[in-house]
Image 1: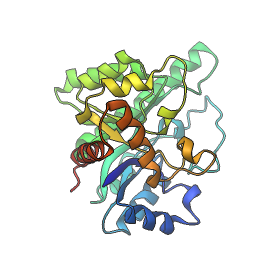
Image 2 (image 1 turned 45 degrees about the horizontal axis):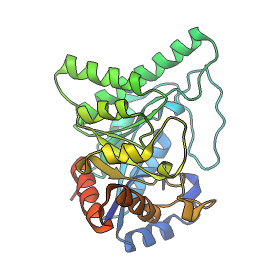
Image 3 (image 1 turned 180 degrees about the vertical axis):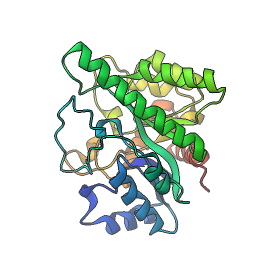
Length: 281
């Protein structure tokens, strides 16, 4: 058995054959955590999960890229459910998150990839994302749910926020860093917080300054969780195709080779890691 800890079956890319994808995924002994990125996609994730008795779960959250700051003009990707929101409606999201099929708040976090050009606007842009993150962390704490973090080009900022919250509140958030793309020092920072590290198809790519193989080697087995980020990040074997949860086996194979473990052992441990993190049986 495997658990794909990060998929977007709630996105338009799966609209035409969603039930077929879910059927072959479950028949392939893969369970799925369906990730929300704004209110509409979160609502859709919950609906899909509630329509399936076993094996499909949901998360609720407002992705930092979907926060309308008025400072960056973003183009909607046809494969996404990308409705931009001016603010985080706490009660509205809470009403979704109380579903028994919701197992985490996410994906939330910081994304400084697309940002304004002027220094003053950059700071305002970053602060707006940080304010959003703090609101969503409050929701996670209130509902006692773990958090899936999205972080792109903002690891130091995210680590500072998390460490400060721990210091002020004297309590730790249970976190998973989705699709980790960072350096060794940043990896150590998250591991020191007790966080899980998510690895997906990004590990097949070459990114300047990032050593995915070393990151996988240095992440303790008991802290690794596997994901696809479907419909994105298809593995080399499926290049040019829509990614889907069944393709998690290719991530499993690559990580097992790097860790020097059998695929069976890695599947067993990472599945248990995901069950522990999400609180599912």
